[in-house]
Image 1: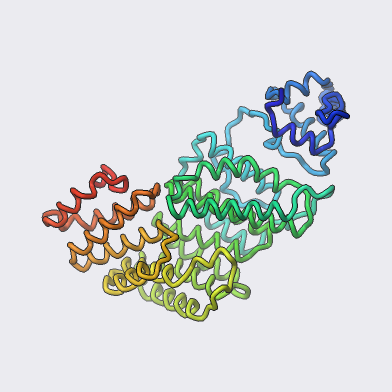
Image 2: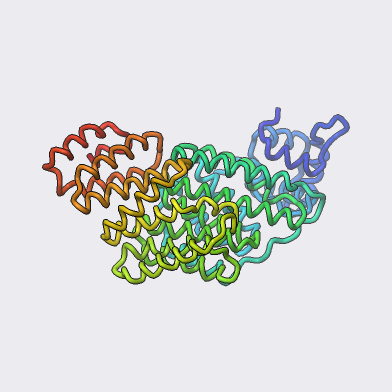
Length: 462
């Protein structure tokens, strides 16, 4: 009985088959015995050993595992990583897994495999905090192009354009779930899918252009895993996924995708109150693409810089960043830029400006832009609509319009019942903090009584 499907798949790919199409255990045992690691240790294996490995038994010693890797690698024409063999290895995942920007694509694939495995196993990495130095190191490494280029893999092609199409289709599917129901809703399903398929695809042989497209599609999916982890409040994990997504885009030589990932990292840093790092990452994204980015993409980089600066003591710099964003957005032609930035429409731009003006304490402008955003929203991005509605409610409270602020917030909170998102709860918490000064108001007491049972109105906040 074969329970180690990963090992079986590798053996089939390597051609260890008998006439009946079954795995040739004796042939494989000889190949493992003749591998360099086995010769050095003096170990020998027979078909019984192979049967045990396929049934799920993990070899106890490193030499045997290395010999298995070498036997497979010799036939596949590439290095086979330990995590590909499907064995259960009782070892502690490094607490720094995923934080280091890889020097070469193969190293990055191993980091992603380890990170996905640690995530699914409930390793403490999932609850880790962010590392400020890792943001800076990744930004600089990408800017100076420190990663070695994606190498050709010898042997017959085992991945093709259809694999790229499939990855991008999966990204679109999970992206819709994320936008409509929040990052915590389907995050584990995405991570499980990635752990099952992604390392194998990234290590497979194929034409150079197909492999670049594959790495880019993988970068988009790992970036989505980062966004969903961020939305679920798993910030250290999200940071690691972002860094590895950046590495995949770099390996694919897709500067625009890589810059958009830096842009997303800036978004997370702002949310966590690391405004200087957030502004720097947005600037790095712009600097690294200044000669190739479409206006709509550069406009978004400016909005992320503005979002960070709005929370600092430099309103003039924030205003300049917003002005640059608006100028570039007004110059863009619909359809320009990559497919994944097309969501950034006039409603999204107005929402970003609403956030900035709220944080600058300019309630009138915040109300105007937030209102425009909600009026022109497509309805496809429930979470984004929730965010801007809460910004509008905040701005009304800041202007002393308690009844209107509570009305807008109540509508948003009730609509947001479908969202499983820590970020959404954070927006509600910020609104509650603004309510404190109006706690004696009858309108506030009535509002609280109506929304108290909402999943977004957490007990600690109420």
